[in-house]
Length: 91
View (cartoon, rainbow, N blue to C red):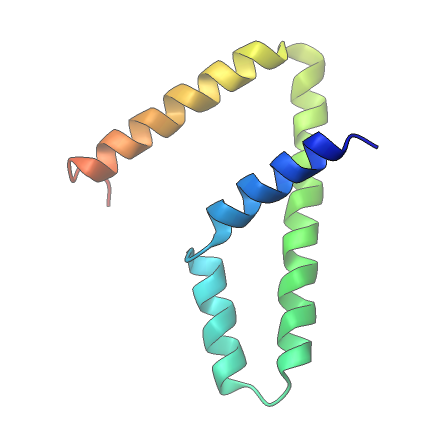
């Protein structure tokens, strides 16, 4: 197992998910619900399912586009989104 890849993936996703709308939705469901474990299980399964879709999509895209181009495009998209949020152009 590639422990370094596991750790970097965990760290990136963990930081990205902190305070996002998914976490806030889970927080509100847990606050209003009777069973916190059901909310936890539902949100965990949802994250696993969306991650599985992303991994499968990444595998397909990786067959046709070299990984360095995927990283470059992702970097440009993140920079553009950051600039839009920073300068108030995003809604």
